[in-house]
Amino acid sequence: MAAPAVELNIVPIAMRAPRSLWKDAWWQFRRHRLAMIALVTLIFLMLFTLVGPLVYHTKIDDIDFLLSLKGPSAAHPLGTDDLGRDLLARIMFGGRISIAVGITAVLLAITLGTTVGALAGFFAKLDNPLMRITDLFLSLPVLPLLLVIIYLFRDSLRSAFGPELGIFIMIVGVIGILTWMPVARLVRAQFLSLKQKEFVEAARSIGARDRRIIVRHILPNAISPILVAATIGVGGAILTESTLSFLGLGFPSDVPTWGRILFDARNYLDIAPHWAIFPGLCIFLTVLSINFIGDGLRDALDPRKTS
Amino acid sequence: MGRYILRRLLIAIPTIIVISFVVYAILALAPTDPLSQFGADPRVPPEVRANIRHSLGLDDPWPIRYVKWVSALARGDFGISFMSHSSVMDLIVQRLPNTLAVVGVAYVIGVLLAIPIGMVSAVRRYSWFDHISTTFAFVGFSVPTFFTGILLIIVFSINLRWFPFIYDSTLQIHDIGTFLDQVKQSIMPITVLALFDTATIARYTRAEMLEHLPLDYVRTARSKGLLERVVVLRHVLRNSLIPVVTLVALGIPAVFGGAIVTEQIFRVPGIGELLVRSIGDGDTPVVAAILLIFAVLVVLFNLLADVLYAVLDPRIKYT
Image (tube, rainbow over all chains, first blue to last red; front, side, top):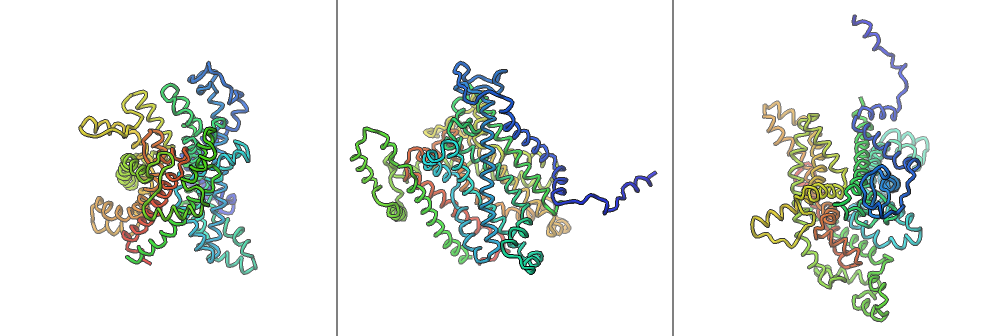
């Protein structure tokens, strides 16, 4: 009785579909239940902000004082703010900006960090000066400095690029410039160990130049930790943006990012708690999902864990 | 050992000098005039404005002002606030106890809760306790502190009316009643901060313990017949705590930064609140002093973390 079952299990290795790193990682990732739930939640939230406004046509700036500070109703599913503006529309619109800030700021931080880390790890001469600069940046008090820079420079950027783009460029730029350091350290460590490997020597012996070795040979091998850091970084950047907006130093009130909506809502907690709760939940769910996905990715991309 | 500390100190000093320069340069090069408040007021005639600028020493080019500022700092003089005309040092010293009473207590509570939680969840890995505490840790550092604060205010101040949501710093403690008032008004801000600190440190402690548990020396200790409690507390915990101590030291300056938000929500008149207000007022001397203090704290605690690591881990060579 047991015999057929045993035969079924024997599959020649050559017949299995070829497995790539990414397929392996995806297979491993799917087994991380919380990470999968988080991925679905995040996709839902992204669709909510991207597709939502196409389906739900209420404007974000329709003022109606008769409807001010009303709780959820059929006409306004998430209620209204002090000027009677529809919160659902504002939250969907604001989500786009919050998420865009998160992704762009991380792209900048990752680019800066990878460049500095790769140069420091690859060229022994650059290592010491670049790492000194990294340590220096690590000693800067990030949040207070962000507040100061944004307060002082926002008017001139606003006049140069317009109120929305100017603030966007500044917030993304400042977050990027103040958060690249951990990535640089990570990439440097990867480069230090990878450049000793045989495949680098092989590449060099067939005449590959430094640039090619860095970009085509070492960097792809160092991509996993960068990817994990980037994922978690997006959550961090969204938190930073909403913190700045919550302190009144981020986007202006006509650009309702999630943090900004909370900032406007904080004086009406007693009569209109829904105003603060919905955008807060959005920030929380987004960041939580991103952190769980980062955790799942870390497990999935860790070769020691692959079974 | 002494030489190691000395060498680290010698690296720390130029770092602080460069940071002070960066901070001052950002403030000085900003396009926003510190006197814009006066500037916007049409009743202030230009001569008066020029006089104010002159009396505040704003006529000099900024590198000269920087040198003056640093040499005053070296004598312990942080300058005079533009707004309140009192010494910056006094303003900060006034605010410091409020910050420490909230932030400091929260951090201590966070550390004291986090280490046992992290330890138990590592030892009982995959148990229900571990699942709950790791999920809680994830929630703890994903939820923005301003949102936790707002939720607490909605639930406990507005609906249940248990705690006041504005922190009264004039409260004097002289009997049980006022002490209870102090506890009541501190509970929410402390909870907000402690939740975040506990989450971060517990997660780290758990990860460190898990690194150590499968090691050979743990098996040796068990095979000697030691009680499991002794193995965990005396062997694994002590070794795992070395990096945790570093993390705790490194986290202290960040805690002051994080307090900015909490102080803003609960209107605690601490350092963070002073910073946000001074930024809004364009009160450059106060802003520069607070930024510099934060930066010095970061550098000092980095130094402390390195020294602690070297003291606690005999494998580290002092070079």
